[in-house]
Length: 83
Image 1 (cartoon, rainbow, N blue to C red):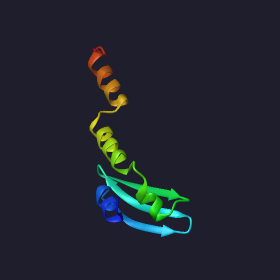
Image 2: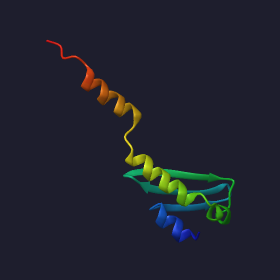
Image 3: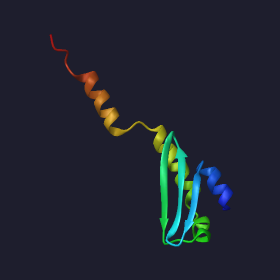
Image 4: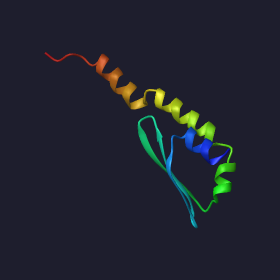
């Protein structure tokens, strides 16, 4: 993957390569994620095969209702109404 592909996939900006690693800010599902890849070079980051799969899995998680939401909504529907 090229740097431009990774930046596009993650809707990322603020790409910084430092002696201690690579850092960028990603924007997914109306959230700002700060990705820190300590102790990796830019070439190593771009060669990692999981970036696309991770983005897809995060998108899937954002589409699912959370367990606490489902539990609370179930409790609200089954709670007796107090007079």
